[in-house]
Length: 104
Image 1 (cartoon, one colour):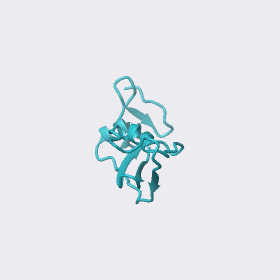
Image 2: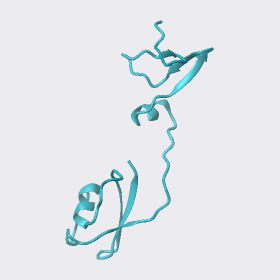
Image 3: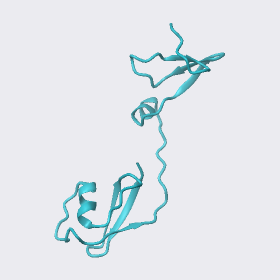
Image 4: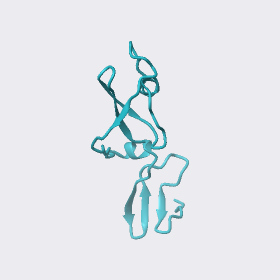
């Protein structure tokens, strides 16, 4: 999910939240619920606007990062043989170039 920055002109605060691209945040109350923060003295119906910001790329640095993000990482082990280094115990780790499991 993308990270978005929002600004509330009433309290002059900027808040960063994660949400789907289809979700539209328009009020301070909605924003605080997403950010799991206290709205404070600002009225919950106060209008917020999404800010333009540079995209943030999160690069996986370990096999665990790939797995927790829902990706698979394959490493070539032999001619036509690849190992899924992110496979869970019940899944075959070795596959051929067609993507079919190799029984070991």
